[in-house]
Every structure is written in C-alpha cells, then in structure tokens.
Image (cartoon, rainbow, N blue to C red; front, side):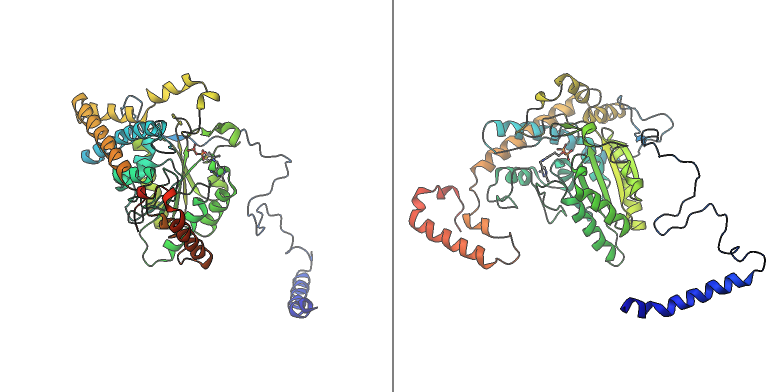
Length: 435
Ligand SMILES: Cc1ncc(C[n+]2csc(CCOP(=O)(O)OP(=O)(O)O)c2C)c(N)n1
C-alpha cells in the first residue's frame, strides 16, 4: 500500500503524458511512441537489434594476439624500435633473472636436503617478473600469488631477507608464521603472500579503490595471479569490482600453462584470461612472457593508463612452467619431460635477453662466469648463516595475527607459558630466540 501511495502521483502524471502525446497527432496517435529504431536502449545493454536468429559462436571469434618485440635470437622484430632502455637497467634485468635462476636451484636443493620444508621455483617466468617490476614505481603496491620472487628481488628484497623467510628464523619478517616463499615486505610495498588462491585479487581492487580516493594519486596496484587462480570466484568478483568502481589496478596473469597437474585447456574455454577483459569492460593485452621487453612495454603503458584514467587493465603474459609445481609435486606424472626442453633453450627468457646483450657487446662469457659464481656464493653463504640463526621466540606465534590480541589468544599464550614452565625441558627451547 505504501508503494501505491508513494508512486500514485507519478503514475497519474505518466498517464497524463501518455494522453497528451496520444492526442497531439491527428493521423496516428501512436506515431511518436513507436519509432522504427534499430538501436536498443535497455538499461542493461544499448546495442543494436537484429532479426536474424543466431547464437554468437564462441569458437569463431578471433583470439587476442600476443604482443612481442624480440625474436628468440635476441633480435628486435623488424620495424619495431629498440626498447631504448638504458644499459645499466637492461644489465640489472639480466643479472636479476640469472640470480633468480640460481636462487631457485639452490633453494630447491636445500628442500631436498631437508634444510627447509617447502619451495616453489620460478623457472621459465623470470622475464615476466623482471620485465613487469622494472616498469613500475616503487610506490606501487604489489600483491603476489607465490611465484613472483623476481618481482621482489627487483623491488629490493635482499637474498638474506628471502632466505630468512624460507628458513623461518628470527630475522624472517613474518616471524616464521608462514610457509616458505610466502614473502611480504611493508617497506617495499609488497603485501604478504597468502596460500588460498585468488584472495589477492579482490584485495588488490580494494587497495586500488583506496588509492583512487587519495588526492592527486600517482600510484597503482599490480596484482599477480596464475591462470589457475583465475578460475576462482574471487577473480571474477575482482574484475567486476575494479571495472565498475574504476580502480587503478593492473591484473597481471602469469599464464604458465598449468595449475599443478591441470593443463590450461582443462582450466578454461574461450580466449583464455585475456578474452575475459573486454567482457568485463577492461582494457586488455596478451603478451609474450618470455620477452622481457614486451612485458616491460606492456606494463609501463598499463600503469600510465590505469593511473591517468582510474581504470583497471588486464595483462595476460604467456609462458611455460618449467619446474614442478612445488617440492610436493612430480610433474613427470602428467607431462612429457621432453616438452620442457624448448622452454629451457630457444624459448628461455634468460637466453633471449643474453643474446640481445651479447649482440650489443654488453655481456660475454667472462661476465657470465663471474656473475654466476658471485651469486652462487652469495646464496650458499646466506643459507649457511640463515640456518645458524635461532627460530623466532615462541611467543611470536601469538603476536601480529590480530592488530590487538583478543582475550582467547591471550589465554592460550598464558596456558603455553605455564606449560613450558612445567615441561620446558622436553622442548628444544634453546633453538628459539629468548624473549
Ligand atoms: C582456494 C585454493 N584452492 C586450491 C589450492 C591448491 N593450489 C595451490 S596452487 C594451485 C594451482 C594454481 O595454479 P596457477 O594459479 O595457475 O598458478 P601456478 O602455480 O601455475 O603459478 C592449487 C590448485 C589453494 N591453495 N587454494
């Protein structure tokens, strides 16, 4: 009834309008209301009408092309300008990619030796980490999934900080609360990695929304995720939030072909992750993730666009997951090991950049030898130091979970304290930092 009371004057006016129009033309009273217009103006869609009955065929649409500017010979594609990135930056790109590769080998082995509990390698994805990170500003906020160690290295996380996290010693920023490779660094604007897939995507949209609300905002958010994580509902919600709420965020999909043992063709249909962008009203590019310069150019443009227009962008970077999913996986159970060779030789992002550098006369075998032995030594020495360091004080496990410790956690901490007073001799307390 309330509805009727509130709306009845409007309805009366609408009726009046109808009568006015209907009486204003003598030839055809409906002429003004019925126009042979081909343009639809529904609130939910303003397209054109058709009288052909057909379903849009998902398989005949053209796929979004893959942007690249470098051949696997290290040469820049004809008629494309050399990226003109200063020598010291390109050298840092290459050195970080090699460092990441060596870091992965040694950390992976350390898990096999029982020195750390878990590890995930980044083989084959070095180009997209370094290419994208180099195109950002250090103020931009990074949300990662877990396989983006090269981004953190570029940002300035030291080998010691990364290794202390993997060893969970008292110098780990997270105080041993997380599994290895769940890095985070507040000072470097890197949100801590969390294991449940996809959670970082809506969080990134939210952070970008907060940036947009800041006066004269000059920063954006970048959110990395795998094509497998893009199957989570969170990814779809994040794309829609970011698009409808105009958030300056770069959604960077690392499409390495696998979600553990599920190949990408079992993970989605249609034109991959990039194909979803236009459907959400998001500007999108697909890029060759093994071409560090293509990734750099795409991310740089995406950043400028996102900040200038307060809009999201999707980058789908194509690559191949060369390593096993993690130390808990054996990928020979679900793929031919022979298919990997191509990605470690002619399609290796490191190899391509090395060829580019050598052609410029900026790198040679001597430089390669000294950089690889220097980094090997750094990683091995740092691991030795890290395992000598005590674990965090046991009380740390109760802190920093909630901003203020709730009473039930306080009770648990007290209980633990009393328990250790009685039975402490049965625990290896000396390997934990004293309070
Ligand atoms: C919500 C959730 N479901 C499942 C898992 C188990 N899981 C961890 S990694 C992973 C595969 C993710 O693949 P992708 O996003 O493509 O990233 P990639 O590992 O290939 O880099 C799965 C299924 C999880 N961590 N969280």
